[in-house]
Length: 219
Image (cartoon, one colour):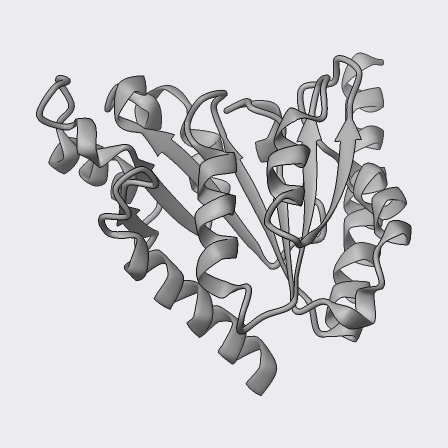
């Protein structure tokens, strides 16, 4: 019975995700689901991305968190439109939450929607939101074993970002092993190494994102 209930929940979510995806496509919005552990630097990545693209693209942000509006307030200071979702204990966002949040945006005035998921490397892997791109943010302080320990979320991803590479000299982390493990999980996975603190490597991520937007516009 429990397996049937879980299956029904996921199926319902998938149907709503398809509706969200169709809406994004209709409005010409590139939606990106940013996942990762607490402290990996998801919000920092969003702030850097907004700074780099805000003059070229109309950006909106959905901030997912169990509690508080702290991250949403940081995003709001950039001047982009942001909607906060507090899950009240739920460890991930789902398609229904996104559907409800979208009513607060003028979708016709958006090119890019950045969705920061709840900090978690397990549950978000199973719940699509209707996004075009799934991104997983890892960081050097977390250790290089995360792909081995949480393969499902990396397998679901279109892109993996290794953040805080400015700390590589201070911590034991093997970037080559990290990359090798990622590619064993998903061959061809896009991987970028960067630091939101120093901006090192950030331009490669931004350029890739621009290419995804261009590809969407060109159809």
